Length: 117
Image (cartoon, rainbow, N blue to C red; front, side, top):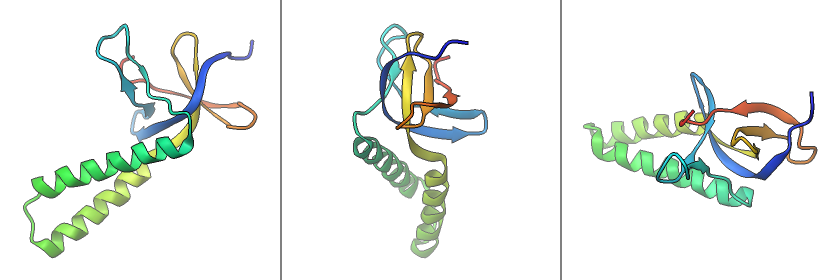
């Protein structure tokens, strides 16, 4: 088996779900949809943090609870999101498949799912 060749590497936000880990996508049509890959870990972490904050803000407005209970619910939700959402170094191959990689050796840990496939 030949080694994978990557056309792009960088940092991505990954969601660990029951069906496996997957990366976020950007684009407007199936032809231009591709994984969101950042140049730096810091950019990916900022995106992840913003996503968690946005979800919690939406939940804050959707939940009908007293203020003390609401904060506890939101803290539990934050813990859950932070357990599911993480940043990983990835490589995208010619076919558009995304693989979680060791950032130093580029050894492949696993293939990540894409919501569009």
